[in-house]
Each structure stands twice: as structure tokens, then as C-alpha cells.
Image (cartoon, rainbow, N blue to C red; front, side, top):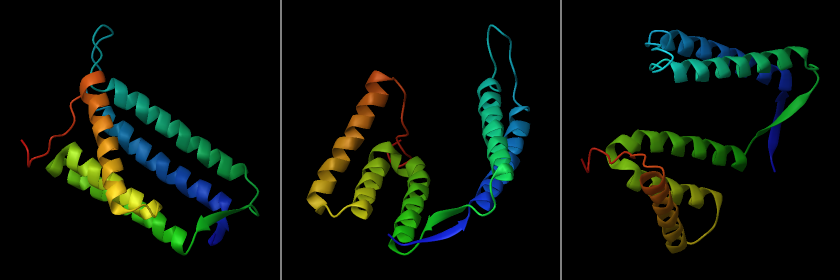
Length: 157
């Protein structure tokens, strides 16, 4: 396994700082939503809770980075592992971009198939079957058990 190393403290401080900045922006936008009443909470309640937890986690990362030994190193992916990581990030971005247009069924099937292709050496017919099974299971769980509508996509609306 190829890897490079980087100072762990810098990583924690960088992620904590970026997270704190994003959490502060998220909370400032959440404060513009209505809070509602105790009997009927408004749209701001969940975003405020999520933003506060995000801010706490980011501050905890900053604190841990600040108190960490500067000599401590962390391994980061390099070579083929870096390619696999960047491919996964690209797949996730592609999934989120494709989801509103193609809908959950097509987007999830493509995502599962390409992810399995990147992470394994399974033959394409097997990947296709597994992808359809996973996507079908997700569909059944969300639509029939949880009663949560999934995006149908502009192609099928």
C-alpha cells in the first residue's frame, strides 16, 4: 500500500477551521428561518441542531489539533489508492448531479455499478445484478417501509 505522510496536527487544524467556518455560515442561514412555537416547531429547529453539532465537532477537531504533538504524522493515500479515492469522490459528485435528472433508480444503479467496478474485479454481469438488487432494496425500504418519496427525476416526471 503506497502512502505519503503529512503532519496530523495541520490536518486537524485545517479540517476544524474549515468546519467552523462552514458551521458558522450554516447557522447564520438557519437563523433566518422561522423558529415556530413549542407545540409546532418551525423550519429552523433541525438546521439549528445540525449546525450546532457541526460547530461542536469542528471546535473539538480544532482543540484536539491544537493540543496534539506536532511531530505526529498521518498516512495519506498515494498512487493507486489515491486514484481510487478520487474516483469515489467523482462518483459521489456525479451521483448528486445526476439524481435530480435521472431519479433515484437510475442514479443509484449506475453509482453502485461503477463503485463496485472501481473497488472490485467482479465481472460486469454480476455487478449489474448486484446493483439492481441494492437499488431495489433501497427503493422498497424508503418507499414502502419508511414512506419517504425518492426523487423520480425530470426524465420521468
